[in-house]
Image (cartoon, rainbow, N blue to C red; front, side):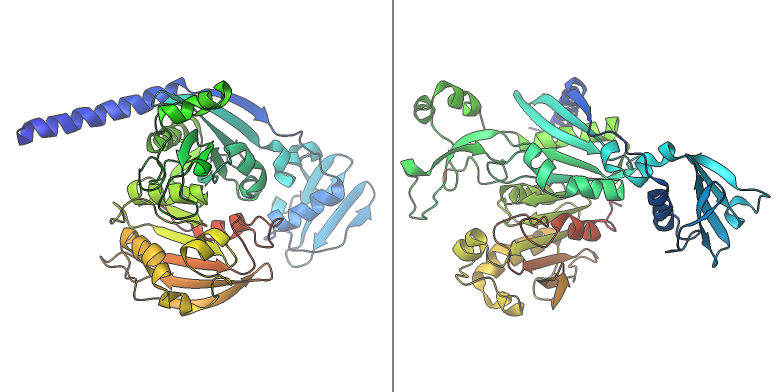
Length: 435
């Protein structure tokens, strides 16, 4: 085939892929669900909120005082007043242009969503067909996601789904705090084998039927081969119906979700982030490797890279995290039977270097031999960090590894462990953006 013919074929394939994505996005069905009823604040709650939301005008805390029909607070540093009379909200002082009388700025009900945003968010449940298979994902649009809102994808682990991590990950709550859009996709159920006892054999007891992302190993004969037709025939009809399909096109699924975010939501497409747990972390790592021009930064929690480690099209920043007591990654894969060390001695472990540091530093285009170490504390918990920041091609992105004291194989959310991963990851994500 000539160069001209190959170029034409490449353009036709690209056009076909784009057309397929646009068609899938256009055909997506969506269910809109308000998550609650707005809560009208009391006067006292409104005054406290004003001190937080508009501290430049109302620097508190100041006591609540009363005068005639007003409950109000006065701020000597700015000479401003904010008060409530019945259901009416007033301001006075320099903040109101030194008007001769208090200026009404609304009623208490007008401030329901700004003061308590959580009940004002909206949950959108999407359903569409990608690669011939029906797919589902949840978009949570917080009340504060009014325009150019950052987006965070939260990818569940094996056996999970989007609904589970919508409820437990902490990203819905973080979206309310920061005005984010949070996305919770669901992997398809696959029937596959996994060599759990690591004896080199795929045995009958190692057959799985569960949700699983096509993050690299799934479908590979040496790692997670899919069930044969004979295997599927042994399942009950309802269970067979869940898994009787080819390997999911998860890269295509994510491309369609991104297109829907671009066309239907008030999303800032230069600030789209990935957070994945376990098998979802493998998918996050694959997306960071193969679609780095789409996502601004990635978090990989409790797993590793399962596709070839090649330099990504764009050198993004990535944070890899593991629990000190993770029995899967820490013990089985890295060999730490008594917990992953909370110091730089992990760099003397060939398994840690070869499985984690070298692959990710290759993808992120960062020198794996240049790093700093420190132990930070968050939520009363020690987190050991290695920071790799020496770009190999003039790039200024970073690669970090975290070992979280006391954590096992989990996505820390404040309930299952003191650390709130969504809170810490947002601090990492918020300054990252696509060029």
